[in-house]
Length: 159
View (cartoon, rainbow, N blue to C red):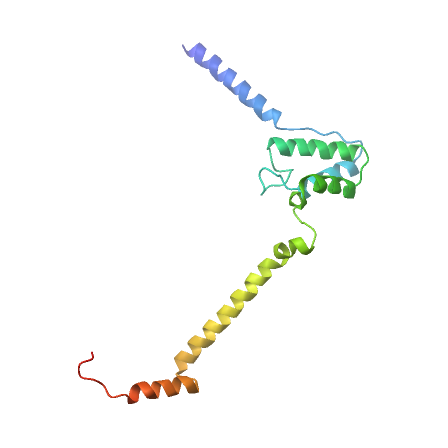
């Protein structure tokens, strides 16, 4: 029985290692410049399946296909702008980790600063309001209202 178990474990290990090797793609480049361009491009492009990983990091099938496509375009002599334009035309600006600043992406680029600004305004107003209450400083309208309330005769029936 231990011989069957060992054979099963060996078969399982071989199957697992074959699956692990299938996910690794090796790309041959004629020079280091093309390899550098390829690596730079796949790090700048977003995996459309994972969405929070670059093409270089993702093991999704689509990411592998896109890496192969980028490799073929780099190998065929296309420049980075041509490759990026092709991918953006096909998949939209979402494929880029850094989409261009244009009217459709203003909220993406400036939204965090807008949220920070609104938060800062709310914080300042809250701090000022609490400071005014702590020092006992009331506006003229608030002082008038306070005097009206204090000057009213108190009913004995009211708690």
